[in-house]
Length: 221
Image (cartoon, rainbow, N blue to C red; front, side, top):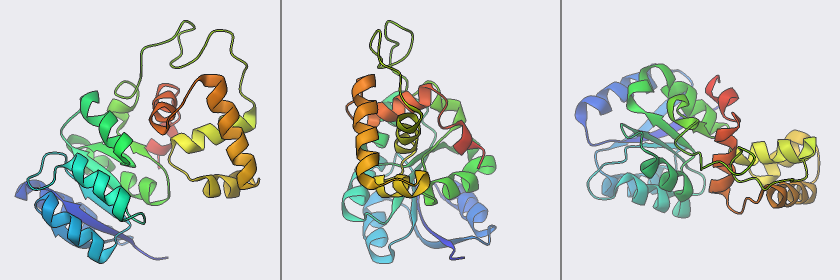
């Protein structure tokens, strides 16, 4: 099996050394580049095309949000995993909206970094368990569930599974393979589910999924 190729960007030498040691200790992961600021990281990511870019939020040059936006737009084969000290929703939500596929707190890295890298590399989304339940949640609606209208029609099992996989970061093509239907059927399930729940964007779907425990399984990978 091919190793997961990773670029690491962090401006703190001690953190960089610790994360490097964690990644290098795993035979399934190959560290193919390091950068100490966002401006240095972007051309490196363009050049080596890693599977995963592990990036800090607060960096000189380009910060984590700017770097995530650029990588998502310019390097579609690279998924971004944010590694940060920031737990506030003010950081989490914009980064996920910008295209980040994972958000891990530095205090959790020793236990969860490798798990997060594998989850994101396999096409899923990884949210640090300590922030997944509250950082992305929106205020509850009249029935106590986020983003849901009163008296809504319940989702079918296919619609639920499709929306769950979308929340976890899978593409329509990947979902079609997983549930053994056509891409057109996936699009139909997604449209129906989103309409029933009043969800209009991927960020809203992710928040809904976080509030309903759809990332719990990912946290166990």
